[in-house]
Image 1 (cartoon, rainbow, N blue to C red):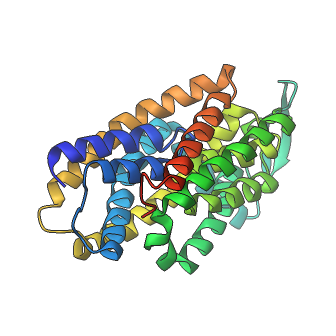
Image 2: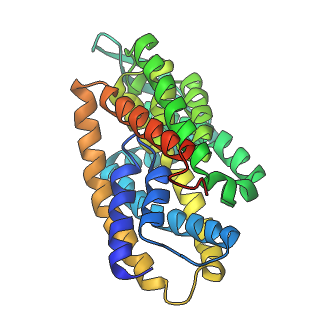
Length: 304
């Protein structure tokens, strides 16, 4: 991978990681179009592509950490403080915002921020367990297959459309509970299949759980932190042996570019979802998925 390829890959990763259109699908296409790791044996090429994508995702992880730094700090401080108080056997009143906007006092061992920390942990368990159990399959050539990618792009688009239709879209961040963590965390497992989209799957899960679009997106981004960090750091260690010599500088460039573009993508999507549905992304997924299927059926492109 040269510097130009790295910049393009970084832009694609930053644009598509948080927009619900499947970053993996677009990165696979971009890597093919750019001839990334061309001439390498198929299985090794699939592993090298997986390692490259996972490492570059650390850039978008940085974007999330910077954008949500105040939230992450508040959650961390509250989590440590409240559990310290819990060990001391204390419970104190906390302010909470009701659905009608009024502020109420309630006695609780955990504040809303501390509870949110637990929801992120609980929601991260499904993808961690499934990801570890099927690590070899996820890194293999099957998950780079365009039949799989195009099918998942269409399937998740239809599920997202259903979620838009049946979701009540009333609940805010302060009202999230264990059911939301399990719904969104379970949906995040779909993101292990390329073409599903982590943000698309988790936003879909949030909408099915009755969350507002912006709340679903914000919780989706917070839930992405452990998943992206784990996969990126794990692949970073393995990338040292899998990727060819001279990959370090291009990887750094791609990661920095993905961080800058990813930050802009988060800002855009949160503002967009305050006043718009995910309809435009659903339509895009359906069109792109259908085009890929037609190209595959006509023999114009190869599935792997």
